[in-house]
Image 1 (tube, rainbow, N blue to C red):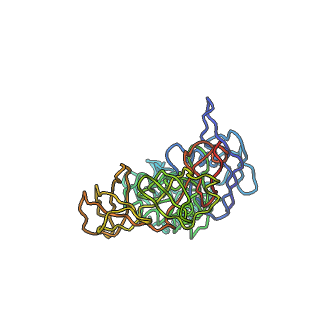
Image 2 (cartoon, rainbow, N blue to C red; image 1 turned 135 degrees about the vertical axis):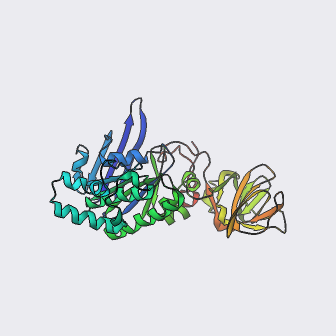
Image 3 (cartoon, rainbow, N blue to C red; image 1 turned 90 degrees about the vertical axis):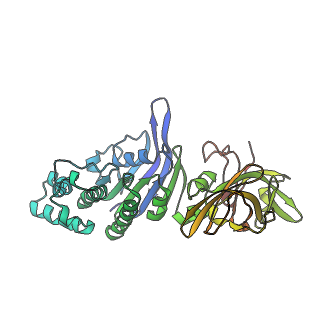
Length: 384
């Protein structure tokens, strides 16, 4: 096993197209780290640079204590599991799993022992004589996992390995990957666009966007303490609701004001106003933070009036899509109940469940001209 260190890593394609920008990241020995973000954010490019499948434009990459920028992929002591399985169709499961060992001229007895040991871990013992075309998608992915396991690498790399599986198999295989990591304790870097995979698998999650690292922290901290508006909106399903408005001080209290809505913020800090009477901010509220009250439809210091548009039952819970009088859309996730569409209701919200962000998110997150930061973690900066 080994740590993986990325120091100011960038990937620049022709015409100054940046795929990854000055990425600093330390993946600890035995850690399961997940790179997550929308398509085109740079997560797969980062993984491919670690694998040696993409050249590094600038920066330093270390696996353990060794700089590997110019080291051939086969000499990096890594094993990669791809989205499309990449199995040899003319080989059996046994031959696919043992191929890398055969190329290393490992004795047959040792190949047999290691392959059967990995097959037992993955429940593949009865499939060793089959060829990939005779396997289901989930079985093929387990063979790909087994092929990586028998190599006993210092680092496992996973590039969206569950994307081709159906929902049930994704959950089962995800649990299998987590169990294997706890058993093998091998340093793992896992790329996905699926936030549920990221939150359930990772010891630590790195959220990326436009080539930038936006936040790296434990899944719980990223969910509860998002660094900026992008992170807050990306993690969570349904996504966080955002309301444009302003922060003001009145009656010895701080308030978020958006149209007819006024929400009291007892935990707001005076410095967030920076001397202004009406400081523009964006409020974020997660769907599960609302309580839905069907008995009244008024705006209060802790409530928002809205009209029900669509109800989506989810068993014990339901997602309710609503519209405020000014036109803004809201989605909330609440316990299942009978609820008529077109009904006016009040959404109750506790002040500690309201996030405040700087407006106009754009540019380099490290730059003074970047906005969108979470007030609770960074405070408001002077607009420039």
